[in-house]
Length: 285
Image (cartoon, rainbow, N blue to C red; front, top):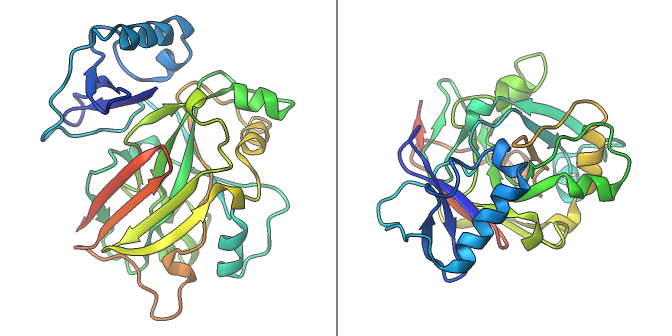
């Protein structure tokens, strides 16, 4: 299923994109798309049955905002330097274990919402990423099978980063990762049954119409199952939590000087095979 949330900020309603591309209203079937729903097999079965019956009312998508596909996210866990080609372009050694950092849930916005270039920014960068959405409480997982069983689905994420804040301002990475609007998510949460192999997805990003990133999740150093298993050794993952699994080569930081960092007025578009497409206009904060 392709689950999403549509409507104005703070007033989104649950919806489903059916197999024919028609947007369907789920408001009378479930209260929202969140961790509680993703952990409730009976509620998910109701959605599937309602979709199969053809009885869900259609929504007019014209002019309708798409919000983040998951509400009330508990935490956003991110994996750094998780693509072989990205590590090479930045001159970094291949990590021996996954690099973990966090983004605050309030960085998450809709897939087509504006992204704000922070005040004082000179190095705002793009990063298209495969997001994993957790559907079961996961702690101390022991196998890849257990890890994948904890995954509710997948989405497109944009891990926007301010490199000067991240690298040149002291401390950890948090200052360059947690600026407002720095994690567009969606358009859809695609349930795991529709993504038989998360390591076989094309992943791409354009800036002002120019292709900048063109990779595949097969390049991940630590695949999805290993990432989920590994993270569960250090923190408990709850339904509705999100893991951003890293970005392929092609970020601004990896380009020759002068590096083409983002500025207000730029337009970024990104997509992952089967998971949909995002488009953001950059504005000044």
